[in-house]
Image (cartoon, rainbow, N blue to C red; front, side, top):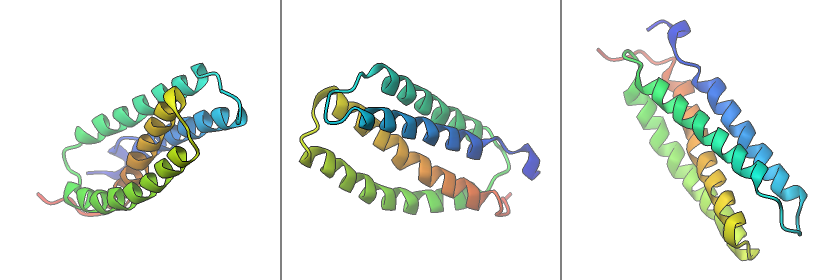
Length: 131
């Protein structure tokens, strides 16, 4: 497959990560008070939508080194699962509760999937697809 005909997975992933970062920054700017949740929920929804769009577009590509993609994705998910687990522990240790914990956990999950997806796509796009 021609490299120019690949979907914009990297750009969508970067935009998704930007929305996650914006949502976290908005919530952190109100600490230790309770943050209004409308903006972080909107950021979460946009980030999730971009991640899903990225995955759907990538799944429609015919000639792609998916074997290498999934090889990198598995190890990346394992590494980021450990990172996400430690961050989730800090949320619980700091007594984060309720809707704030739910939103932070969802953003953390998006982060945990998005980074390995970007790593795997970046590696696999330069690998020869098996036919």
